Image (cartoon, rainbow, N blue to C red; front, side):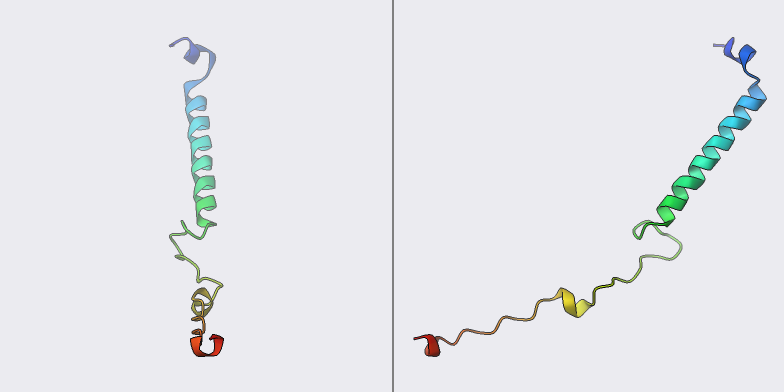
Length: 68
């Protein structure tokens, strides 16, 4: 395993690895910030559907006298 460091310069390899991992972490965090569920800065956005639209109005009662 030590021979791989004879081929690659350890300083450049580790700097490249850290830059890649930092870029990947930033990308993942921006993807999470763009979602509604995992946006920890702004919190969940308000729903576009009104609360009154979520609950169905009660069905009218049947008039059994009229239907016989």
